[in-house]
Amino acid sequence: MKIVIIGAGPAGVTVAETVRQHDVQAEIVMLSDEPFPPYSPPAMVEYFATGHGTHLWRGTDWPERMGIDYRPGTRATGITPDEHLVQLDQGAALAYDRLVLATGGRLYAPVEGSDKPGIYNFKSLSAANELLGLVQAGQAKTALIVGAGFIGVEIGLLLADLGVKVTQLVRSRVMRSMLDPETSQLVLEMIRERGIKVQGNDDADAVAFVGDQRAEAVEMRSGVRLGADLLVAATGLRPNIEFLAGSGIQMQWGIRVNDRMQTNYDDVYAAGDVAETYDRLTGERYVHAIFPNAVDQGRIVAYNLLGRDARYEGADNMNSLKHLGLPVMAVGHMRGEELRLRHNGTLRKIYVEDGHIAGFRLTGDIRSAGIYRSLMNRGEDISAYKHTLLEPGFGMGYVENLASSPTLTA
Ligand SMILES: Cc1cc2nc3c(=O)[nH]c(=O)nc-3n(C[C@H](O)[C@H](O)[C@H](O)COP(=O)(O)OP(=O)(O)OC[C@H]3O[C@@H](n4cnc5c(N)ncnc54)[C@H](O)[C@@H]3O)c2cc1C
Image 1 (tube, rainbow, N blue to C red):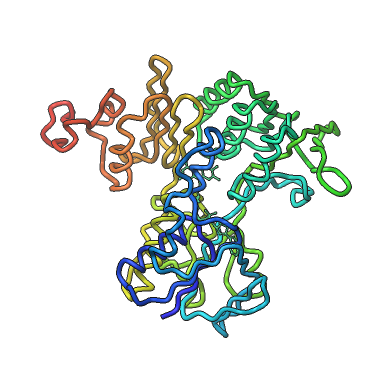
Image 2 (image 1 turned 180 degrees about the horizontal axis):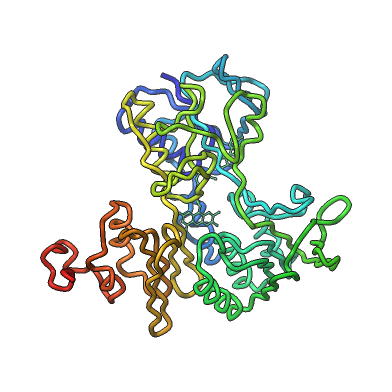
C-alpha cells in the first residue's frame, strides 16, 4: 500500500511513525514544502531564544531510520481524489492508495490586507527564520503584533527578550477565548512588566494593513496608522487548505472529517491543525490547534490506515504559556460555578457544571493539573468533594482512595 502524507508536522510524523511500527512493508511518501527535517513548532521559541533546542525533535536521520521517502521542499498544489493523484509544484503528479492531509495552519488576523507581503508569521520554521533573521541581522528594532492569542503572546515575549521594542494590540483581552478576565489581566500585567507596550480597546481596533507593494503600517478604525519594522498578524490560526480548492474535499474552516478522521473520500484522511474535529466534552466542531490533538489524530489516522476501526474521542481544549515567567495553563471551558483561590501570587480556578469539572485555569501553580484533567475527561461527579479541589496538592497521594477519603464524604 502506498501512503502519501502531505505535511511533516507532528500530525504527519505521528501517522508515519505509527504505520511504520506496525507495517514494515508500507510505502510511505511524505511531502513538506519546507526545506527542513521534521521539527516541533512549540520548541522553536526556545531555539530562537537560546540558539539551541530540541526543535528537530526526531533527528535529521528520521526519514532514513523510518524508511520513509521524505521529500522536503515539495509543495502539493492540488489533489484529484477520483484519480488518486497529488499535484506537485515541481510539475509531476504523485499517485497514492491512501492520502493523509496534514498541512497544518498559519497565523492570521481578520484584517483587510492581511495577505500582503511584509506581514510576518511564526507558525512554521521557515516563517520564523524569516522573522528572526531580520532581528538577528539588526534590521528590525520594532514590532507590532496584531492580536494576543497564546502564540501571539509567546512571539511578543520572545521578540522583547531579543531586544525588539514590541507593541501588542489587544482589542478585548489577552487570550480571550481561553482565559477568564482576571487571569487575562494577570497575564497582561506580566507582559507589560516584560517591557511590551500593550495597546487596548479602541486604540487596538486594527482595520487594515496598508502599504503599496507591501504592508508598512496598520490602520486603526480611528484612522491612526501605526508602523513598525515587523508587522505580525496573530489573532488566530487559519488552516492551510487553499490548495484543496476544487478538489471535492469538504471543508468549512478546516477539513471536515468523521470520527475515523476520514474526509468525504474514504481513502483521504486529515489530521492536526488542518482538520476540523469536535470537542471531547461539548461536541462542538472546530479546529483546536494544539500539539497533543495533532498527535492523537495522527494515531487514529494510522490505525485506520492499518485496517483497524479506530475512533477519535474528540479534541482537548487547552493551552499553556511557558515563557511568561509564571506557568499559565488553561484547560476545558469556563462554564458553571467558578471555584477560585488566589494565594501568594498564584491564581487557581476550576469551573464546575452539573457536578462535573468543565475546565480549569491555573496560574503560577499548576500542580494537580493532570488530576483535574483526568477527572474532567472521565466526567467524574466531583460534587461531594468539590470544595477540596483547590486545596494545595489536591489528589496527590489520596486520589486513588477518593471514595474512602474522610475529606470527601461531605
Ligand atoms: C510558536 C508556537 C508555539 C506553540 N506552542 C504550543 C504548545 O505549547 N503546546 C501545544 O500543544 N501546541 C503548541 N503549538 C501548536 C502546535 O505546534 C501545532 O498544533 C502543531 O504543530 C500542529 O501540527 P500539524 O502537524 O497539524 O501542523 P504543522 O506543525 O503546522 O505542520 C504542517 C506542515 O505542513 C507543511 N505544508 C503546508 N502546506 C503544504 C503543502 N501544500 N505541501 C507540502 N507541505 C505543506 C507546512 O509547511 C508544515 O511544515 C505551538 C505552535 C507555535 C507556532
